[in-house]
Length: 404
Image (cartoon, rainbow, N blue to C red):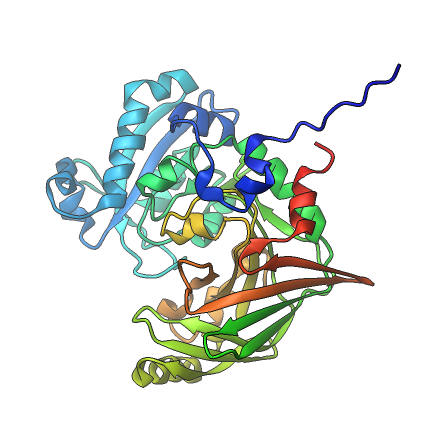
């Protein structure tokens, strides 16, 4: 008699949970489990923590920032990582070090870090000479993402590490509490489901009923994944929380909506992979004018450098580092993409402060004024719906649960 085994599908991949990730249950955050999983092997590794301030020389000395209002990200770094390492995690993982350093805040996503860094005694040091050269693992828990500059530095100096910008309590208790072997496996399943796509079309429905469509050419390229594992000794930087499949577009045209920081809504007009201009939907015309002036002054700021899809069943954290990893969301990014294998380098921008990598996340809590009515993938003769109304399609859900 032949017995057919029931597929072993984790509880979080039940359809009702995938469609309503806020109902997922998570284990407690465990620093040893997180670092031991992501960075295996950890034995004999020397680890440090980087945080950022506008005035690092004053705030890092004797941990002065702990007595100041604000600095929630840096205080989480101290409580959950610095103290966690000191109170047993170093021994459990067979690591040494655990020091904390502060660098000057870049004020922009993925801008290069200044070399100056300060220790907790107030001493001025060099990132190149004293940090990258002397540590095996660098954990950067900062205000703005440093994934791109640290990716370049890790290849130069040979360390591994992770960027955890925007760290908050929701992220600690969900996106950093999961099993990263499962995260990696799920990201690979969806990577294969999207691999070698020829193009992606995204339909955006506005409140006035208009539908804008953005087309992104991918040229059949190999899909890439952010899956959170930095195993072995090969230099690499994880972006935590992880869980994303992404492409570097080869072409793009059409229109997509943009919600600016002040709430202004605009339509971005794209040709040849570049945003040419923004036009006002509602809000402040001066915000649109400022963006258009920036595009005219430094056109590289409007180049589309990434198209990404979330692969994890996670709740909204109100921090893009986690929310762009949520299944059913997608994001575009403008600016440098050299850390993703792209061809847009910091040296190509007119001004250093323009050489950012800025994600534009489309998610219900982030962009409630418009809906992603549908995302479609074309791959040869195959056409698949990927997302409808900010929910993963049957194609994506089946890809996650098949062949477990």
